[in-house]
Image 1 (tube, rainbow, N blue to C red):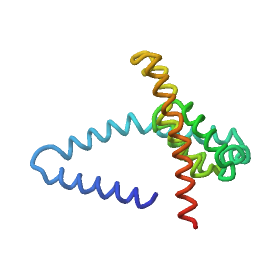
Image 2 (tube, helix red, strand yellow):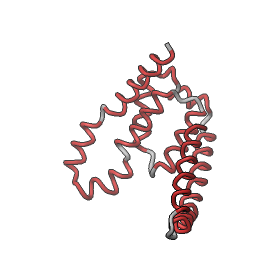
Image 3 (cartoon, rainbow, N blue to C red):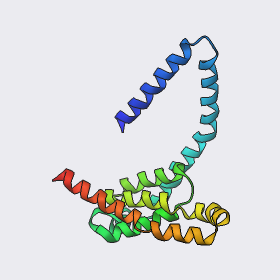
Image 4 (cartoon, one colour):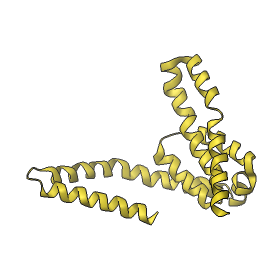
Length: 166
């Protein structure tokens, strides 16, 4: 995680330097835009982290590990795929929940299946957008053909983890 933060800071500083050296008002405009984004997104991130922490604290780590830990195998991958699809909202909420689950002992294959389930199924998006705009038939076909994707991603993640650990 530290290296990704360092890369992001390096890119931001390089872009800031380029904007600062330009003759126009790019640097000042960029700072204003960044500040506005911070005011909008910052509180959401703080609340999402708080919610994720509280959710995981409500469920004992032993329970989370029993249902979604490394030793749960395919059963845990299937459950994570399903639960991921039920998580409402965007990445500001789902990624802190994933981080909290990871810290609680959820296995990597199960986390990959959880994230894939959230990406593919996203019931909040299906109900709010897909069914009203594209209809029941299209939505049913898409969901049916997508059923295998989150479990497969979890299985492949498990194989990669096994190969990497020897």
